Image (cartoon, rainbow, N blue to C red):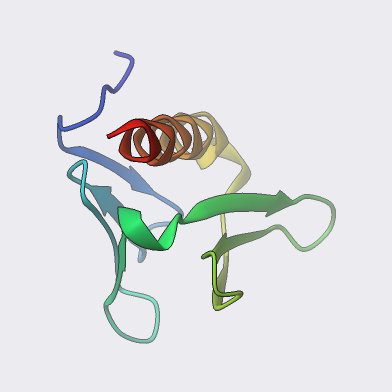
Amino acid sequence: MTPTPYEPYEAPTSDSVLLSFDGRVLEVFGYVDAARYHVREEPRLEFKSGRIRRLTIIVRSGRHHTMPYDADRLPGLHAMADLLARSVAERGRL
């Protein structure tokens, strides 16, 4: 299933961390503590592969949140990144 804006979407990064996006807020559960990023902050996901895989959530102000991800979770995480990009672009047109 391809996620669409305003349809809740969840993507685990590992067995202990979950990203959830409802079209307005990206939430991170299970990595140190919960974190929230509103679409108005223009969150985006960046991926670092290699021996140590890292996912970084970066917002317009430069604030960031980095966590490891499991390689088998990458398709769902890429779908989350695409959904965020579409939602941020849509907000910019409003």
